[in-house]
Image 1 (tube, one colour):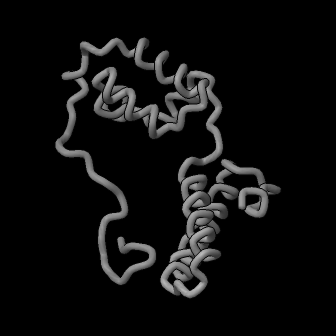
Image 2 (spheres, rainbow, N blue to C red):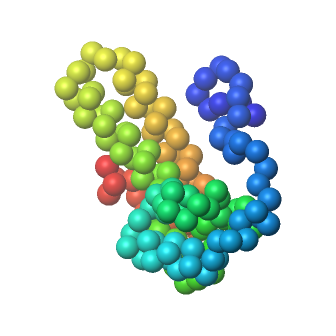
Length: 145
């Protein structure tokens, strides 16, 4: 797999170091961890921060290794509705920052290109999330920008 906006090849995801055996984490009270994750999510904490807190406070290396499910599926099974996609929100914030920089520095052509590349990623993600039902069909990017 190649990267989206470069000529170089590479993996598009990070890798966990080592393979974890779930039996090593038998000392973790799974119900307590699930309750903590659900409680954090009800306080509108993003999934990435929930995962970090579970790692740091409970010693869970990853929900996929301990519970054999991803965090989003684990939360959905426990009645927590998934919110707006976090990666899309982060890209929108990056675009706003680049647009603000462009207004101050109109001659910065590299930033204009960066802004265009970010927008193409946003549009691609929007299409994917609409197709999978994560965002409504009527949601428009004009409201977010």
